[in-house]
Amino acid sequence: MDGILEVAGLTKRYGKRAAVDDVDLAVPEACAYGFLGPNGAGKTTLIRCLLGLTRPTAGTIRLLGLDQPGGRRQALARTGAIVEEPRFHGHLSGRENLTTIAAARDRDAVRRIDDVLRRVGLADRATERVKRYSLGMRQRLGVARALLGDPQLLILDEPTNGLDPAGIHEFREMIRGFVENEGRTVFLSSHLLDEVERICDRVAIVDRGRVVTEGSIAELTAQGGSRLVIGVNDAEEARRLLDGHAAVKAASIDSGRLHLTVEPGQEAAAAINRLLVEAGLDVHQLAPAQATLEQRFLEITSRLGEDEPE
Amino acid sequence: MIHAEVLKLIRRRGLMIASAVVMLGSLLLVIGIVAGLHAHDPRGNDAVGGEQGYTAVVFLLLVFGSFASGMIGATAGAGDHTAGVFRDLVATGVSRTKLLAVRFPGALIVTAVLLAAGMALAVAVGQLNGPSTGSIASELPGDVEMAALLIGTQVVLACALATLFSSRGWIIGGLIAFQWILEPLLIHATHVSLREWLIGGAIDQFGRDDLRRYGGELRFGEGRALLTIAVWMAVAIALAAWRITRRDA
Image (cartoon, rainbow over all chains, first blue to last red):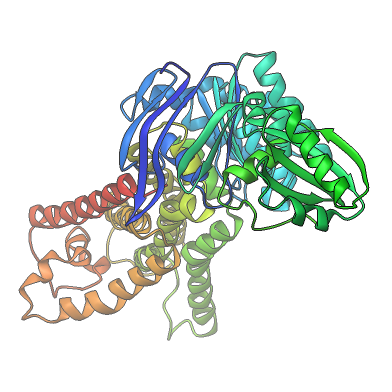
């Protein structure tokens, strides 16, 4: 493997439970890499292992080409991170909080404080105590803190939590700017699939501590077969009729339309159309559809089929 | 990083006010009361100043100073953990032992400022009219040394224990309970052979008679006393270092 962040056989157990279970990852340079999973899948635990906040039970980690934990000082000097909800000393101002972290880094980090505050839009609130900050402001201060070391690698755990839509949009633009304009690498964990789909180049999907699939967004959404969207006068009846059909892999109803995952090829669409029409149903739409990351995610993770959208 | 530790402490307005009130305000209160009593009945109550007044203020500074230094030390030890920022400090790559190490000088610097103010107040009181049985000038260096030793060890103990248990309140309460209830009981129990290993008794050996908390009840050599203090400091710091390097951040 060759990448800015490499993990091999990484495992973290708490008693008998494996929060991270034999994970292999290779994150290439200048890439926005999404790490997706439902709550409790092991995303935060993996990030904590990467940053040396907890010791892995087994496996190896390389950050910026340096084996961990031996090279942690050098690697983390060029790494910025947000882990879970950013926490601060509430009695200190935003600037003072950054000063305490910059002191642990280097002199250049102290000189960057004004710049990072400006970058996240907190320059005019920097002297206020953090306990007066809103959740969104704290999140932005967390991003500022992560940027203090002029990082080559940013590790962000649920970074858009608490941001309003405008804030999320700004954040998305900022991340893309880091990657495309500045050549940084961003490793981002999230359960917000839409945001990951918009921000990231590559994605790994994790469930119950294991990486179940990995690839570019296009590769992941192309996996799993062809998709059809069928508009019909009785979607429930249509689904009942197609239950067990040889060409149909999966079926769900969304906004009154039937969404099918089918065998590739035109024969499946024709066969399905014929079946429904001969059963007396009115088919007013039959079109191919690109799977979204959300659909692929739900298929892959253990929650497939448990919930139907309204 | 030490500057950052000092910043974290001095920005805690409540802590700074409480420490100043405990360490200095209490002295002013007592001085005021004594001065008032003397003004009311000069024959029945000594004047507040002189060497006797100076010694009394220094003694009270040691008593109240141990409370304040415990508060400051415990805050320095547990502050990052209770605020939840310890993980962000670890994520910078700086070693955990360094994160522990800078807590001590930070807390000592803040406490030293209060201690210096207290000693200045004691010297000022000594310049006022009052009874004298000795010379402030000759007693001052030894008293400063005694005060620095007592307050300093209190800060280090509180900081180390707060790091060990990630708790401020419990450590402050525990230290008070130990030093004002348990330790005096043990020291007064003359049949207890281990009392020479109690830190309060060891620090007492460095003070002149008027400043000893336990009077003449427990006396042994300064070498043995230094060893006792060193063992307490070493064990506390070692436990704190063990905990901070092993815990999940």
